[in-house]
Image (cartoon, rainbow, N blue to C red; front, side, top):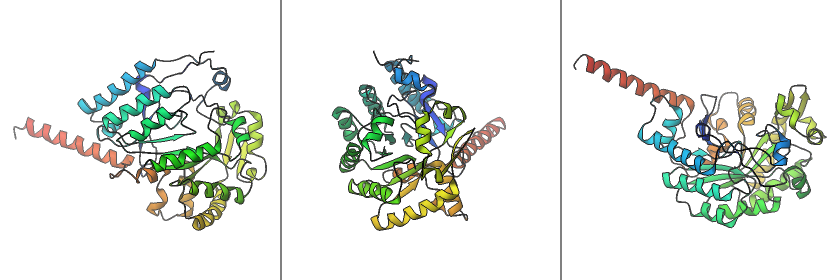
Length: 355
């Protein structure tokens, strides 16, 4: 059966995300509506059966998607909307997150992924990626040869290849992912390890976590980031039953609880666990960070006085390794847009008064 890929329509390729004024906002670029890696815990898919049957119809074509991407960037350059977060972000060439929900390096679409990288390179966009593998040397070579700055995370949710075959069927084996981290860092692409979702039963002890951290250090990972498993409402219904049971088996059930609305992290207990992990990290001398909801809640509790460093997100950490500017927060963008609006208003008033 021919694999059908669903592409985002023009107005959905770029999205601005970020809901906390003090956090850096981001522009997320999604090339695909779906990810065909088939991960059992993925919340990016609406209907798992359609994904596994490869029967999802397309919303566009590769050529249309590429043209739409270029057109959106050029619009921000030539005719930006003065009140648009997205136009302001693109025009100032802030880093793009590619991708947040789907994998930009999804297997079977390497040619399209290369075109996207070439666009980022041509227009000078730094970018950040998260992936479970880059499957061809041609695509990897394109990434190596780019002149624009880039950084990324390779997701490793388990050291077990048996687990990978069952729950992440279209992803590289764990050992190959660590090798990929090493190759990227050697080529000058700052890369870390992404442990998301974290705390399923594949990591039953701190010793297992320590083993993963040690392998990450050996691979030259710039940091290891952890993210919690959170299934909400309708998403919970499409997750395979055996995965729910796996996730909530001892000792993972110490850190999660389940009700009819979904699966949620127990942040109070997670704080205790991460304090133990940070002790391991001190010995290994490798940086650890937390993704969005963990960073927001755990760090906010651990540092109630609002220590600035405690609000640095994973993406910001890696972007800091190559990007000289401060990535703006929502509040910073609002202040700048307000300043520009007031300046336009002042000039208009001056003109009307003949000044």
